Image (cartoon, rainbow, N blue to C red; front, top):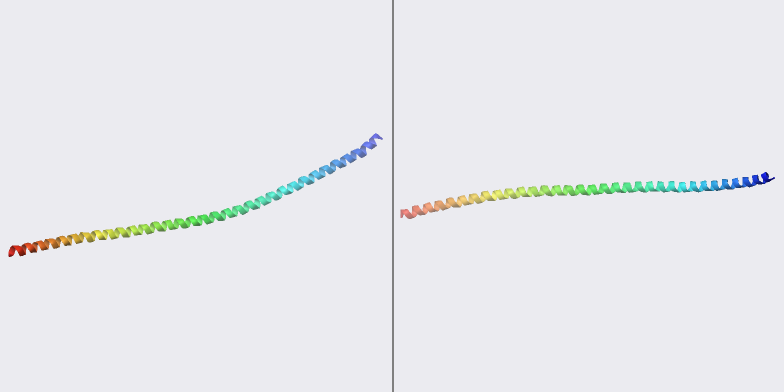
Length: 121
């Protein structure tokens, strides 16, 4: 009789253990589902951030390229202005040289004329 009383008690205890294990497995399954969902959401956020970062990188590179073009255009414009200024300066030097030569020639001619006019009188 003692064995018969232990069996229903043992069966009851096994049923309790089975329920506890089932509840534990259900909780574990639920927690795993939450973790999987969080991982999925994390991957989605990561993908969204990666796309945003790629777009920002593209925009920054466009801005930098535009600045580089402006700098190069400015360098070309400055080089052209310097060349023009050098050309003008060279022209001014030639003009000044010719003016000095003409004034000297005129001075010599006047001086010769004065000597010839004053010496002949």
